[in-house]
Amino acid sequence: MPIRRLNQTWKEVPTKHQNILERLSSLFKPRYNYSQLRLYILTLEPPAIPHLGVALSDLVFIDEANPDYISEHLLINFEKCAHLTRTINELLRFQKTSYCLQHIPSISSLFEVTKSNSLNEDELYK
Image (cartoon, rainbow, N blue to C red; front, side, top):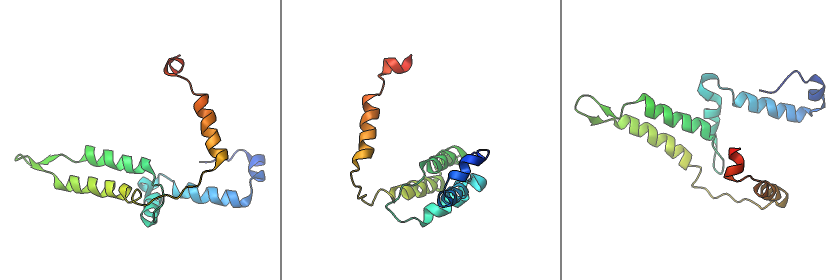
């Protein structure tokens, strides 16, 4: 959610960028368990990067909310397995396509600077 109190700052942001922000804000609203985002992800054709937070939340919910076994005869809960499989397959769908990424030196140099300035484990502990 953008900070709306910055009236003077928002006046400087181009309308095009404000419209993009509005579309993304509505897409990522947590209302109805991110229903807008879920629908959008279903329509995506790879290559794309799915929102891992939603998928991981689904996996945790499926695992925690459904028993591994049903009834006193310890029958495997295949419905739970099917839910887990569907969620994982949705993620795997995006891994089956190759990504043709181009090297952008200005971006990779940022990673190099960050890597060279990184702290070791002892420094991070302090």
